[in-house]
Length: 293
Image: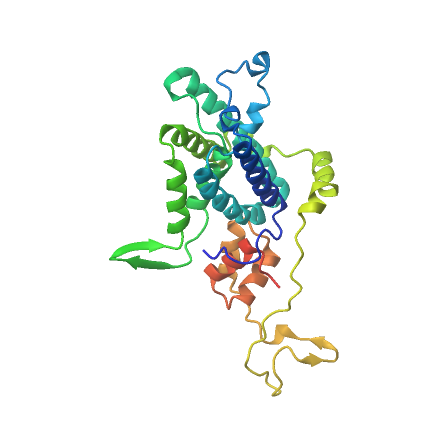
């Protein structure tokens, strides 16, 4: 799946997460305090004056290798934010992080030899692995040395590398993230109903959101090199207006329904199909990348 265009446009939560993880990780490395950021070993963190580590443990990577792989996967998370919407994605981030944290602390209570677990947004990254595998369609297939692969192979390989970077110290947080993502998918305890309070969303948009806002690409649609029935090129001015509708293919109802079933708005899905010549995979890429004119 193409994930190379438009950066973090339309994904301020993912951009904020990337900056926070990178900034926090660089700070921890520069001050040689990586060992202080992992999750606390006890539910009674407040009594040991370590409650702040419940947040830092889900944000700061302990090693540069984990930061390298994690940063790429956080960058890829933007496709889920564009699909869900920023508020719903922020709610997903909070819920999966919280559930993953509880699972990790529970495991450290049962298996003391597992402590300390690696710090970093493993719950978010591997929570997104569930919709990545289950919901995102494959755009292309290829083979290397006879081994059949898809366009998801690179992301999955990087995810596996992050999962096994420090063996059990990264493996356990990653698995907890996958479990948290699966619990969200099946709506365990009504997890999908949770939403970030509206006043917090508005506060974010008016403050940090303005800093993280990315410019919108104002480029017009690519013009079909063919000609209209009157001999003019498609997209040329007619009465002062561009009549692209004369040459855009009409989307098939089946393709529209398929994209709607995946959670996309019907009108936007129709427009994506028109601009993709009714190619469902290409239209899905456009929708996830926000590449709709």
